[in-house]
Image (tube, one colour):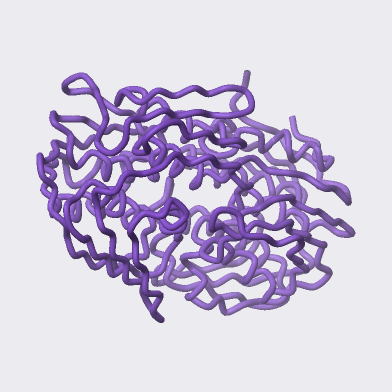
Length: 441
């Protein structure tokens, strides 16, 4: 079967209610924390993507009992530092930076060398951001220029550290937090603001964590060596996956969509705040707190007029995975939009800032990349009347899915390669799009 899709027609107006699979960040974090708990942990609505499946495979290699059934996943562990494994094993993180970086934090006590590998895309990404602080705990690393493959050998007695995290990397912060669990004493992290899923899970599990939320950073203190109780979790839907449908609805005339049970953690909803500034009609319904996370239904209506934006950089971290989609909305704005300080986009599966610009150029929208930012000259009346081919993007799942949204929103005849890339984060993406009436072959 060809690893590409053809999209030859814009999507027709729709009025639907849908539900998206479980949040990827929470699915992986649940699995890693469950591997350190005493007893059985159970998750419902766990995302069954390659990134999550690879997480479960790695835990099995480390001696953790994992049962993945049709309706749930169960993990049984004997607590902190209870991994049992063969000497010199190799763990494959696939395409997942979350798995590759966070699992290193759990291995600071590894008794023998463990190699971490990944696919071609992950092997191009920076791991020094986690190996440098983990080295302070006493772990030793072998790698080439801080890239995968990386070999870690732990220490018999990890010591607490003080670390200043300046990138706004939730993966770096979370890796340090997981390492701190198995450390005598108090680890202190001064962290630039980023996703806080790990902190919320720590709080829900009553782990000894203290957090001071200051204006520009969070001060996090973790006392190690406390037993972790099992975590039973009904994982809410992923806002990053929902974003594709939010943008499609905003750009499709006379359309309305309600997405149920979405994780609207404030550190993840930058896209909602940015789109509201741009005039997109978004309403939050049935909001509740579930095990520390904010969860709600998200209602979106199509927008007749989209405003340009000088995007506040304070939203960058909370929208970092959604900027390719936001650029599509800016393409339909009446005026010039500005986005700045997006260097972190190029630390993802592909150089996404470059790809965002390339897609805009392909569809006929003038843009200019400058100083890790982009200027987009919107045109509310533009239409695509040509053939477009999207390929050679390092199999980045978000580039593929963004291209599908562009095709359905703006027209033209598209051939988009590497559809298998969606297995990384959102394997049911094409099925969900078809529920809305999209014609894709």
